[in-house]
Length: 79
Image (cartoon, rainbow, N blue to C red; front, top):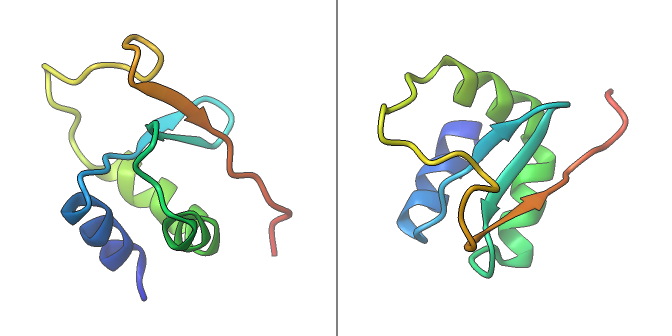
């Protein structure tokens, strides 16, 4: 599975990832399955690059600004 496929699968599940400071990703609370978390960990660097390359909509809410957001810290040792 590629990073694009991971994003497509997450969107189908109603999950939107956001990039935070320090190479962290945020997702709405309660939406991620164990399989989603594993896919995000496996493709974290590619997901970060992909998400950073996408335009940010003007109406986008920043993670942490609403009650439905929690910070999902997915850190790992780089290869």
